[in-house]
Image (cartoon, one colour):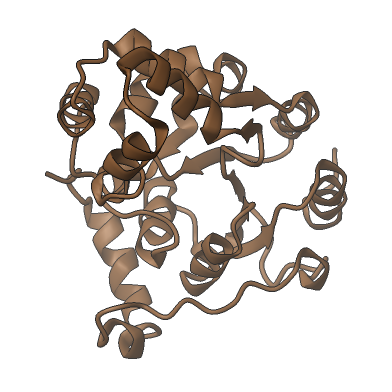
Length: 250
C-alpha cells in the first residue's frame, strides 16, 4: 500500500514525463553518472529555494556491521544469515518504496524474515548502534535554518520515520517533520520519481531544489528529475559549495 499521490504530485510527474519518455519506455531507468562536486556551478541556473540532504553518510556516520553484531548476539543467529534475510533480500528496497505503511507492519515483516521477535525498542537499539552523529554537519544545518528552507530525504521505511526522535534527536529537534523517508513517497532513491514527488510536496520547482547525498547514483537520480545536486564529500566541501550558491545572509 502506498501513500496517496496528491494532484500537485501528479501534475509534477506529468511535467517530467516528456523529458523521461525514452527512459520510461524501458523496464529500468538509466541513471546518468553524477558529476563530481567540483563540477557543480557556483552560479545556479535557478535561485535555490530549498536544500534537501541525505541522512546516513551526511549527518551521521553509519556502521551497519555494528547493527549486525548486536542482532547476532541478540538472536543467536550468524551475521551472514541475518544480512541475507534482511539487507540482501527484497525486503528493504520494498520497505523503502512504501510496501509497509506503518512501523508495526514493517517490524512484523522484519521479524518474520529474521525468524525472531524483536521489540520496537530492540530494533531502535540496533539502529542506534550503527549511527554516530557528525556535530559539524548538524551545526551547519542549524546555521542554514534562518537562510533557506531545509529538508532531509532518506532511503528508509516507516519504522525509522516513527522512531526518528529516538534515533536522531538532534536532527529531529532541528527539522521535525521535514525529515522524510522515501516510503512516504512510494519510490526510493535513485528513482527520479521520489524527487518529483518531494518537489510537489513542497510546491517548489525541481530546478530550485538543491540536493546533497553521499551516493553518486542518488545525485544522478535527482538531476534526472531536474534538481540541482552535488555528491557529499566532506563538511568543508559542502559548506563552501552552499556558501557559494545560496542567497547571502541579510
